[in-house]
View 1 (cartoon, rainbow, N blue to C red):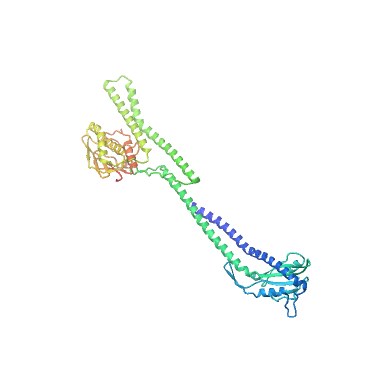
View 2: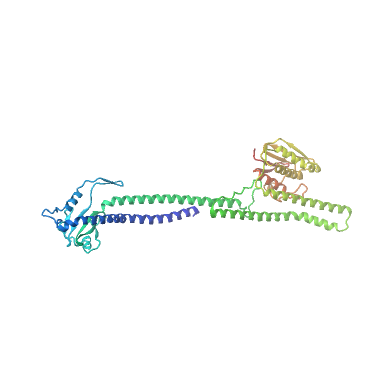
Length: 488
């Protein structure tokens, strides 16, 4: 399972469990909370009405007459209350009826007054509201009109009626719970919709956080892949410019620390691999000239004919020059490999660079009886003149090494392309893909391997810095090497 899916699944699981329990608690608390508020208001109402009924109860005016109705002022006020027209808008709901039922019992629990005339004379002493109030306790009860219907419940709250500081009766206020059910339903809907909205917002935040995390982790992964070297047994095509490493990802927090740590590790590993590769290749390349110099030096310690002494001394000089060339080119290549890009300060004409390279190699070509020719004009571009001249100089040196005496090495310009063409034997087809590797050489026309392979490696690096490409192919006779620069 991928990291993003795991993070998203974990977030939704935690968020879903939390939302479930929170919504469940809120939904479970709405109904009792509303009923608690309702009961609190009924307590106040019952006590006020009990005070108002105390005089009529003490005077015996609350007792029902022959027509089962009381003529006391209190009873008349309550009945007028029950028939009052009302049209009240309460937070979006319309109230058009008054729902209190009020009844009064004496000290035995017998109903003396009932605002609905339903239970006058009935014995209510068994009901909790009456029985507990007569004992001086708080009396209240909730009774359903229909046993299995929770919405048919009626809440009863009682208050004692005092006469001369003694409990002379009980006044009970009753109100159906269905009158507040619509408020409960609306509150539950609002809580439920708010919970769904919160869940959706939390999900959106979770998706955003997950995408942010996965995006940054993938940037780190891509960066790690961009800086890793080839696996064992792999070899990059030297004719293609190397893929540049990505910049260190700018990510915050611990991921940023990880990115910087990876960059430091990359720098250390690159430095170590760079040194190890150079040491191995350089050691191999220096073995031959060092062995030749040592052999010639040992022989020169003996008494030798003048001709032999001159031959061995010449060999020492030649091998020393070879060592010097290797060292110079290694230094040049190491400088180039530490750079990330060319620094073109203005338009550079390829024709001027080709003329400068020919001027630097003309003397060496003349010693070998080889002519140099420049054809075409080429274009100008934002290149670094010194590096372009360096690349062409190395190509000409390589062509001079392979060209037969009396032949011509041509430098051909065509737009943003420079080609160096010689008339030598070319290189085997299997060796073409490896041209440009450090210390990879092919046999010279005489059969010797006096080159170091660093010249074409320098050319390859110069082209990589310019974002260009080096392409080599056999032309039978000769080898043609083209440098393709990016157009201006």
